Image (cartoon, rainbow over all chains, first blue to last red):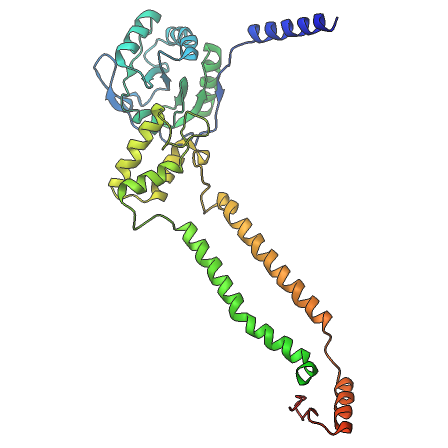
Length: 173
Length: 179
């Protein structure tokens, strides 16, 4: 009888763990929030020049990712959907930064997921360090004036990102 | 015999004799504190300085490892940045301030000695000084209670007894017994 109860409890535990929702994104306390975003003057994974300053006047969603990171793989379809929904030239711009990964891997990842936004290579890791990134996926929401509004740790969802942007717009008018 | 006649004087003088010892103890403690808080600066090579800083900074993407001991990409990058900044002549405090400005104060394995976090260092020192002072005060008072000061009547009584025996040791005008 005791063995049967133990078996049922164990099965219930396994079922609960297997079906629980995956870790979701949370806003974290960061010393960078409220400060000007560190400059990014680098090369994209396709070899083009990229300057974050050229995005002044638009909200920017700066996403640090890696192809070897399962939460990034989970997040990617959400980012593709978000980019499609906000594809106007005046909408929020999505920018990726490759974290501890190669540009070749990132290009293959973008091709397979249909991602079309610019992604910056960061082979030295200095961009990640400038933003205090610990591990991907991490995302920063940057205001049109270049100030960081939010630092989000974990895989984004379209709804979650829209909520953060809505709050940002209400703050910035 | 004469020595036994003036315990208060002896207590006072022995306390005075201990003052230099207390001063020496305070000096040693202060030197230790200064040594701890200013350790590792001028006599170290740039590589040693960089390593000392790396040991005090937590690897951003791993648990319970310093930047010096981790091979995580973020730790490798931080090591390169620390070495570059040391070469540029930045102090350990300046470099730590930069890292904290990116990752927050939790990135430091050793809390800073200034600001609110500095209380972690100073409160134990303060408590130690208070405890030491309380101990000294306690033993000082207990010693005084164990050896109560003789009253003027006591001195007169002893003086009369000595004079009646005609021997040496009668206290003089200052209360000191002569040998």
